[in-house]
Length: 115
Length: 113
Image (cartoon, rainbow over all chains, first blue to last red; front, side, top):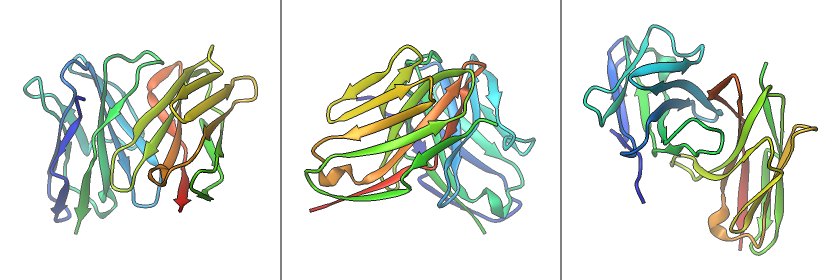
C-alpha cells in the first residue's frame, strides 16, 4: 500500500537556524498538509496546500514558516530562525481530494529538537 | 471556537473485552468526523470517516457512530487485541474550512493480557 514518507526521522538543530522537513506524499494525491504535535499535546493543523498554493493555514503558521513543492514529488516545510518552542513532531499528510469522505494519509513524522 | 473533547483520557481493558470511546464537538458548520489510531512514535492512521448524513461506519472490529444533533460520536472496539493499545483521536472538520481540522486530545487505550 502506498505510503507518505518523511525525512529525516529526527532532526536536531541549534536555535536560530533554518530547518527544512521533507515529505513525499502518495503519488496520485493532490492535497497536502502539515501538522505538528508538541510532546504530550494534541495534533495541531499548520497548513494545507493544493495546486501549488496554500489553501488554508492556522494561526501557528506565521511568517517563520513556508511550504513548497519544488519538484512535483517532494513537499517541504521550512522553518526560518527556529525557536525552542518549535520542538515537536511534524507530520505530513496527503489526500486525493478535500471532500469530507476522503481520508488523509499521514507519514510517521519528523521529530524536531531545537537546542 | 471549534473544540473537540474526548473521554475518557485513558482506559485500560483486558484482551478480548469491548470498549467505547467518546467524542463531543462544537465544530460548526459540520463537514466530517474522523477517528484515527496513533501508535506510539507513528503517524495517525485513519479508521473511519463520517459525513453529516452517516450515523454509523464500521471498519473491522471498529464501529463509529455519529449523532449530528447532539454533536457526539463514539468509537466502539469489539474483542480487543493487544495491538489495539494506542491513542485514538477524534478529528472534526468544518464545511467552511475543510482542511483546517480540529483534533481532540485522544484517548489512550491499553489492552492487557
